[in-house]
Length: 476
Image: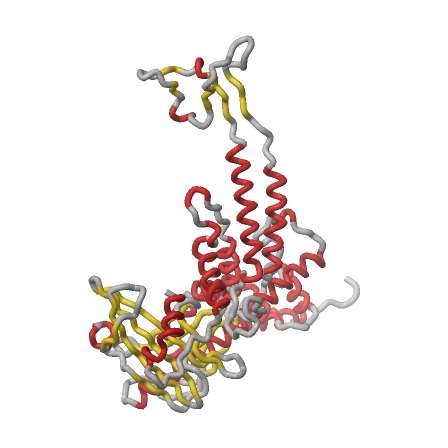
């Protein structure tokens, strides 16, 4: 669908949105092919894994890389909106989305980005749509590389008719406009003819054109993987977290195929002379059904004193260890190219164990995750702003929503990626004993106490330490 949308916008933009439209697909052909490749690698392992019986078995490394980075990015993540009644209402509707954020972040890591877009449902409630990287088409960017225009699409099937909805979103100056059109076709290869939105019950309440004034950014949050783009250095779009490792992932799947073939070709077998097999009623040789791989038929009947034995064992020495070492080296290369610590995909028993090497490997993963967390924080901050603007529009129309107010967004990400939790706990206990860190904060962060309980325990301990019974003077 992504490639068809780009074709429609490149070839028929004026027919879709009028003669005076400035809508155009701001995606190069190389980026289009790259996004399609990244999606294939995530879904099925890659185009090299197609082709029936002779296709490669995929290790699904692309999916593993995206999943692991999404897990580390959202691990114990907290996002709180505070500052007013408006902030409290946004925080309430945002928390269920935050609780399930790992999956959208994984899709964003896989395809280079994902767009969080708030919208009003048929009941007037604000919902959040996570639009994947191959489900929208960027149309405009400003001079800083920020996306300011995009086309979103949706389609429904009613009998033998396909209905497609296109939404053109544009931010310009201080105005954000949305133009919506619906089309009906008999085939998915073409948009067909334009029809009113009211022809589709689910779209009947959508306004064909909406404008928001006094805004300073697009009304969405775009989570973009910020990494060098070797596919198109001039494209402001994000790139997949495994883009740099695409060829290495292909090579690793090839190596995995060799390993599987080694196991398959090296299975124990018995070469059996035809004369040693029991014939069936048709005179054909019969092998035990459950051991067809174990017994193999000789057709020349050359057993005997001058020929081969009735039975010969086929048990070649496996070369699996060599294949495993080669595959493990490739997995380490994938880890390096994707910004992961050694041992994440490769065998952790084969990872160098010097303290500096371990720290350097963890630091690489830490830096990658911190970059993703920063991008995610920016996207969620923009999402909160967008939700607030939708609430402003409802408030101005007389709806029963919270009044305008300040919205402060704070984030708390887990920071145990670079340091072992036990080592960190021991380090902070040393700070406590040295008087450099409050005891009650140690109890809250490492022992799970509430702030009030921790302060009470710390005060009690301090009182005991100051009591006369606790003082000792030289001598018994």
